[in-house]
Picture 1 (spheres, rainbow, N blue to C red):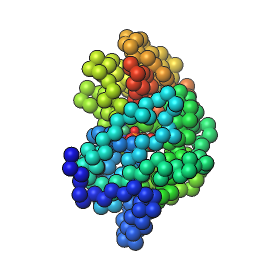
Picture 2 (picture 1 turned 90 degrees about the vertical axis):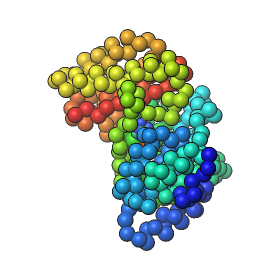
Picture 3 (picture 1 turned 180 degrees about the vertical axis):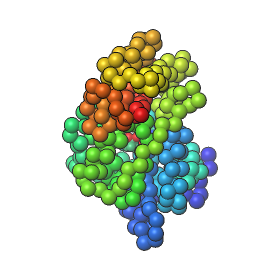
Length: 287
Ligand code: PAJ
């Protein structure tokens, strides 16, 4: 594929910082969209949202961050499609792609890490120990390097959003986090770079997650508020599809990620399940 020409591609923190500082002289916000590549329409929605707020001033980072993968996870086989990613980033409105090497972001192995205690062991952090430490550490590096006014994230990774909001608050970073809605395929499956792992049969089973999410949304809309009832109802949806193996089904406060007894507006309902060897997540913020 031909590489896009008007979007600048840089590989070093120094170049990213230089880009940001040169724009800072002019008016208007600078936006960053952190990604691990294998870009799809969900990522594109973040880039478009960033470009509509910060036209001509959007950086997209593409970095498969080894630190957020566990030893038995899919770091080595995580999908990589750099040329197509650059083309998609450009068409969605990115001005710059930052694609560092591992050595560039973790020089000499690196000894400095960011831990968001009390949040980083919840939900995905419980099943994937060290995952949110890896996420927080790499996003802190990106925010410190790019100094963006705005950074765009997807509600798809709702626990990640909670961890990063707390990190930005605690470290007194000046970036405002903007959260964008989950983009889904027409049948409801939340888009994910990992969906390419699914066979046709597995993809059909993967719909159990969005089915559970929709079921809970409709129960809440009809007045059900009890967390234990809602979680039990979601379990029933999964019981009908045993090939989708539940990791967690939780109803939590979106800021603390602690379980709630009663669903209120803003409560996060989140599920994680594996289909074959692919781990998938989905969620909704209850109204
Ligand atoms: P990645 O999985 O590539 O996702 C990058 C951003 O795209 C995240 O903010 C994620 O929530 C958002 N996203 C993914 N699927 C989406 C969908 N279907 N709809 C809307 N947004 C979606 O999340 C990461 O990378 C990494 O943890 C990262 C933050 C880059 C740190 O390494």
